[in-house]
Length: 541
Image 1 (spheres, rainbow, N blue to C red):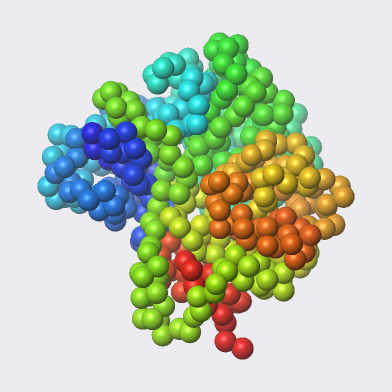
Image 2 (image 1 turned 90 degrees about the horizontal axis):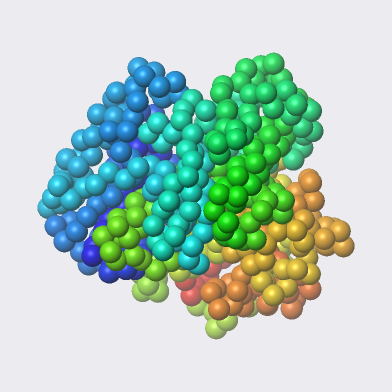
């Protein structure tokens, strides 16, 4: 079976392809168009499809659109209630109309595709499949929470023998995701885009508004919750983009973050009681809140929590394809996160030659990069297939020495980010417990935070957040041999088995994807060395 998955309705359009029980490819449209998030998260952009991502997925498998057996579109327009509070007033009919016509839009975008092969997959079912059917284990509970789907904002259930059993849902306007988006916008950030900034800002505040929020945001006995809109001006004035932060802004972020965690804990306890499962899988935008994830694992009833690396809406493309594959009797094996574009050494060399750059091919790339990092140089790292999802996991990364506090400010300046935002440590898996406590190990996808052990906080200050935590990525040599060797070489030179790892991009730009993207980023940023495939490019003296 050849099954294409498509996400296009809200934001982060993406495509994924499953062929004969294997996930062949998955990519976000932004990596091709170079437009952050692919499009604006507004109803009149629903017609915009991940055309380039879909064409690349098919080309990766050597297929034409006519070869497809099914296409899963991660939204079912027949389930929308246009009169429901929480949908977009005045615009929802347009979004629904565009979604309903998606089969014909796809036929135009992918000539040869039979529109009759397009199937609508409920948004939260696609999210659930992206975690429950992609996790590295079998039966498990599943929880999906985000802004909204067709008429709901949440799904709780379990997978048994590859089939989803739904146990609870929550209708709009009650939405944990929409309330977090409200806060994001209130704090002067971009809605449906910058929620991770709110999570970082929360570490600087005190949750002094938490008790007042309890009345508006709370779990209910039936496995759902209430989370109606809140007048946030009661707690802090609306911040205009670019304006200074006031202490009450951080306090409000901390209060909403804490209340979110508490409600999620209540939902998990209910779900555990209903299912008796020891494992939980999660997806939806809320599942990218790594601070919440850590508390859910530490205080919740599940022994193990697995979060889809592409937990946001892009992941519903993968989920829609996985759902149809299972439904059609050919379930796919769990994929990794490196599902995007990769380039041969010859293709990379051609890009370097075209750019007329001087480059070297060192005998030991890992040692060369480790020495540059030990010398406190900034290194752009481009290796293997691109990551599917928002985290740089050692394929499209910007690396630095973690032992110099100034490197946090240095990296945020390079990337054009707010200075309150942390950067993450990449650490050898077998040494992670020496440096970090609380939080799961291994943790290969940067989806949990860990406490930095007190004796290491002054040794790796660049990756230690203001609250003493770090969002780690563990590296196993069996999975990432070159990255692991670079870490070993760096540890041999510095005594530190950690390097700073943040995404290779600048503010407002998608993560680097192609060699051309990498060269453009290197050329426009004060990066000292570009490691691209087996080659290195140094900035001229």
